[in-house]
Image (cartoon, rainbow, N blue to C red):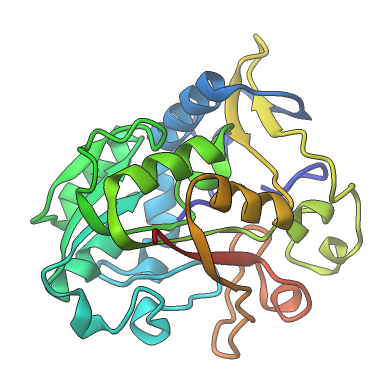
Amino acid sequence: MNQANNPIGPVRPGAHAEDSISYEPTATRRDADRSESSRASRGWWDSNADDYQDDHGGFLGDDRFVWGPEGIDEEDAQWLGPAAGLKGLDVLEIGAGAAQCSRWLAAQGARPVALDLSHRQLQHALRIGADFPVVQADAGVLPFADASFDLACSAYGAVPFVADPVHVMSEVFRVLRPGGRWIFSCTHPMRWAFPDEPGPEGLSISASYFDRTPYVEQDESGDAVYVEHHRTLGDRVRDVVKGGFRLVDLIEPEWPEWNHQEWGGWSPLRGRLIPGTAIFVCERD
């Protein structure tokens, strides 16, 4: 699951890049192409994986499938289908991080493959214990044959960070078998209009929802060290359809009463007023 407090964009996931590097990155809004975005994501997650797992590993658990900061668990939601029906299915987790979701899938009898761009994140997957394949690869170039999987899933992995989401959708479509389901969660597009602050200051609109210019943190040379791409809700729907999928459901989870934690800009205050996460349930006909 992929989630700083900045006035011009949302939502990177909890740890701060400046905690792991010697300079203070400059936040801006500018274009960032596919290769720059991929390079920045790999570097950022390799540098921040340890802090991320230290900060959020307890919430994510070693073998839970958590869809986002709200804490919605797949065991309860069953957006992948009834847990008993996962047994024997080939499942691809994209942007798996430390593969907590894949570990839960394996416990249900599925055959998961955990894929992530970050070598360091996958090292954490092996540290926790993964008796299934872990693969380092870009979500836009999936190293699998056509029709290799029954299901694909991603909890805040890859999709918010890629410059060409349609290409990723098409790749997922390619590796799924007919009738396969693709479910992914990402930052709700509405969040881009608000400051990434968990308190009252995060409830006033500060930017145009329609500005698709990526949020970029860059180093002293102007090279991106973190990139996140904004799509409107309509854009996300069109990306899914252009990738070949049929959109079955779009879920905007409400903040549960039991969850009192703050995670970056996510919080009970904001989560009960505006959606923080969007979950897309897609099928390959």
